[in-house]
Image (cartoon, rainbow, N blue to C red; front, side, top):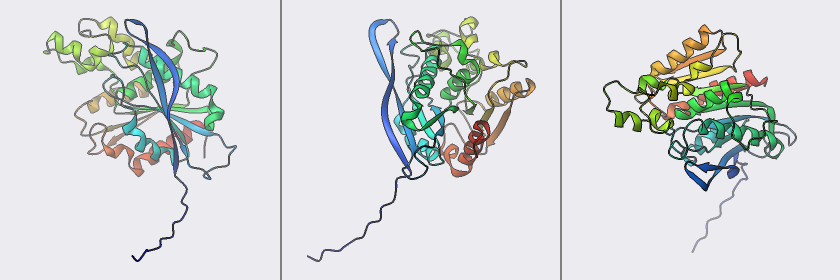
Length: 294
């Protein structure tokens, strides 16, 4: 048989993927001895793309999923595109509402920030250059962590490690979930909706006190400077109304906060438009602006 030779070049990988780095163990609701291991998916620029001693900004991307336990792995290829731009990108697992109600989700993300700050040298991270980012429910969690991180913490957190961030990127997030539960829904449907699940299976129309701590606008004040915010929302989103982001951007602007808002034409909810090169350009420019990069 005629064997055909092939010469193979040695192309360096554009990014490195480190899977399932455990950063905490947390209790499941109602089960004293049942602990949930929480892990990070971490992506770094490939070898040879920077000097070994160079420390990079961290983008902590919080995945969505209706406030249920997030599906971590299907976002890895998208996160890799961001890592290729010269960032360390980490995706934290958090307890879903079916495992533990609010504010467990925010607590877990803040624990991830503390873990990555404490282990920054292991992953080439500059601990002073951290940006939060999230999609859908993950954007809501990221906004609360960025705006009110000093108000939430898990019992075992090391509070000597700060959780402040340089900025936050909100992709099609539900900033105020009260308007997402119609008045004509039966009580059972309202309790089973994502906002209802988040607060322990309650009808938020009858329990405004339960949903109030989850409303992003409640943490926006004129006299308190918040991290800069970049908002992107698809014009064709049929899951989280575009008006949710309009409302948040208006409140931030009226409070004198640093906010940029983009409508992604024709994009739906969590559709591929949000990780195309021209949109990633916006993320890259924002991260460099707020972290003092190039």
